[in-house]
Length: 395
Image (tube, rainbow, N blue to C red; front, top):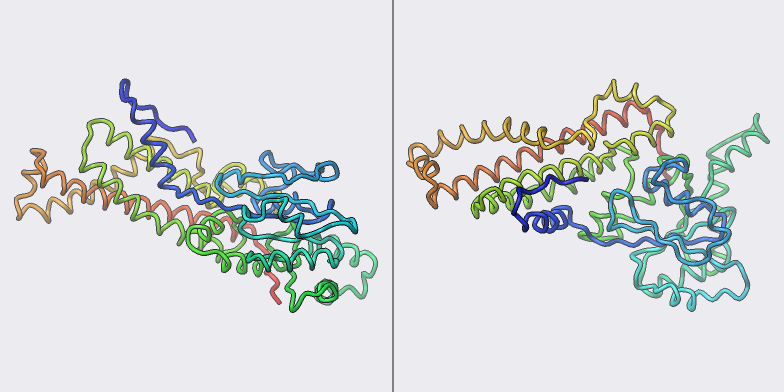
């Protein structure tokens, strides 16, 4: 996202903008380890967690696993503080989970996801137990269940029963882990191609419950928009920050550094409005990925939902929002403060006037961002409804 240039000679503005951007967006570091043997679909899973597909420009590279045995980091394209780590597991008898975790710098990861293609082995169970013993959460994911269902549908077209097949796959995974020493293991059946189906809602809920505070918020914002519930959680997470941003805006107004205050105010609003669009998938990359997933032309959907995309947010648009929101608040403030004689201080630039102006700035920023956030969330909701998502399956 490009930032407006500061006036000539104001050298401090770019630095202040960078500091405010880091603070406003609350970049909380989150490291998620995706583990599994080669070919189990780690890269495709990471890509799906970003809401992307193999063909998308920002998707994690697929096809490198056969040659790469070292941990590989994939930074989230929209949330740079969130990193998915692809960690291959050796399939040999000499594999030692304790030594492996120590080599991987275990403490650097917030939680682990162990992926299996056809079944889980005693190696998976031993690795998970070691992770739990060290105080970290670990989740088992059985990948590519869509391929299993497709194969069964082709081989048994007259007796095909999807629920029964999924039930059998799940029970088989549980038995394999119990034979490896796991007690009451939980396995999630997923498809990277259809992430909104099967057990992803359950996995998402478990991951969110395991993280607290800022890390929980970072995870909620980083995961894809697969359901109305996910959109609502994102809206609530973003909304909690609006008061903080509004307060900073009012302080900038009270400090009143000529030109600098105005540039900072407009810039932070521009950054946040674009960021809100990215959070709700209102950008070209996310839009294209959704179209590929559901097979509907992008232009057709845009014509129906008329979303405001991140690239369309400009300084002029921010100024228009400020004008429409600020005028109403200013008139209300004038009517309220006139009997107190504060308006004269405001016009003359007195201390009381600056405080009043700060209050107006706080209210304006808060209402503007909240209104824009509500609009972005509603646009995302309409898009999700138009795409006619299938019902999630939960056991």
